[in-house]
Image (cartoon, rainbow, N blue to C red; front, top):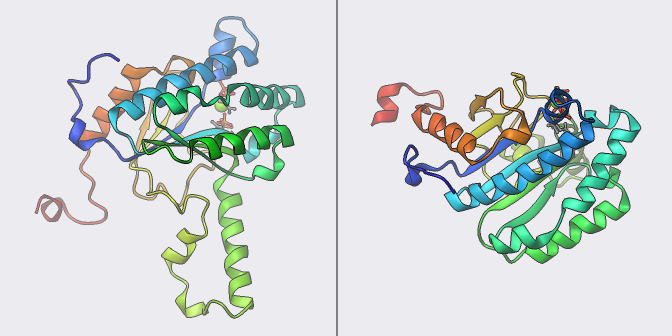
Length: 245
Ligand code: IPE
Ligand code: IPE
Ligand code: MG
């Protein structure tokens, strides 16, 4: 739990996106194999999901495995898929009223993992608290390319007029169409880049980067990121005077 005095519970970001980075370096620091870091990282997911739900976050999107991560050594990819399979259990979700979803190229995941994920999605579909979304085999360029392809098909089939294509049309075809854009994007692990994550959706997100490796990112770190968010003035292209009303 911990204290929440430095954050305003009335202004909690509705959608927090997290690039969970630094598992490998965290393990290396202790002379352990990278897989040890991934296991520790999985524990952090449970801690952060519970805390976010408790604070009233509505959507939590976690970058778990990128399209580019398929290029890692085969043994690491296999270990990550096994970890994913083992870690998807409904207990944390049911206990915290969390609805579970995924985004990404699901077909590329091992069949057993897909089955496990889909069962969890089904079983938690009735939960009404926070929605937690794992981005798996996800990248923005994959997603936007898919959207372009689907829109082209609709035009070709005469279901959509080229003149009617708008930003909303694109949004409707993204895998994130069921959620609002992130208010806050957090990246742990010290790198200051987006690594192909939610590029369209983060157009107006507040960005928070910290050096803490993901396995060490616990409740207090999350609250620190939210406190940072609450100090920003979101102008969306307007002037400060306009926003202040
Ligand atoms: C993030 O940690 C987890 C995944 C990308 C799967 P990393 O594995 O990238 O850890 P570092 O960045 O090498 O420390
Ligand atoms: C981003 O981390 C992907 C995930 C956290 C799942 P990476 O470790 O793959 O990013 P880069 O390669 O350092 O940009
Ligand atoms: Mg990394």
